[in-house]
Image (cartoon, rainbow, N blue to C red; front, side):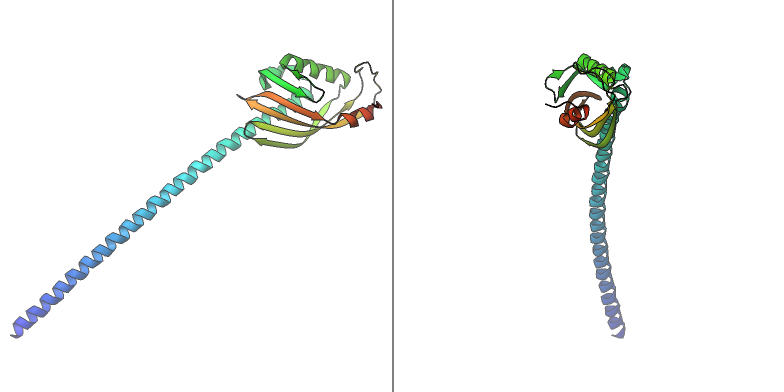
Length: 196
């Protein structure tokens, strides 16, 4: 009888241990599943964040490239008169919209640069602000130069003049395709001693 009681007690303990082991196995399995779900979600979130960072880096690289094209145009074309790089920086289908009215193409742009530099041989465009978004680059700058050549029948007077300008450039296929420019003409004319 004692032997049977011990056997039953041991069997009961063994059965409880097996149940406990099964419960522990079930709990461990649930924990394992939860950890895997969290890990998958974290990996997905990590992948999405990585993709987002890559997209941002590409956008910033593109905007930086667009800015560099426009800044080169200000420095090398307008401020230095280098017409050899106009075709590199401007689209063959370029359209310029000027405050004085009328639209111009690429060949007219080259003429405007040549004429501007003959009137103001030391013409420089100093950039104050540059903003880029999508395919647009906006520059706020000051154009200055010495009035050394005849302009629209007005004889040169040797005065140093400057004016504030804002230009919006649309970039297409890595070149300036379109430009809208607004300049402070009243200040410019007043500095030249011309009144309207």
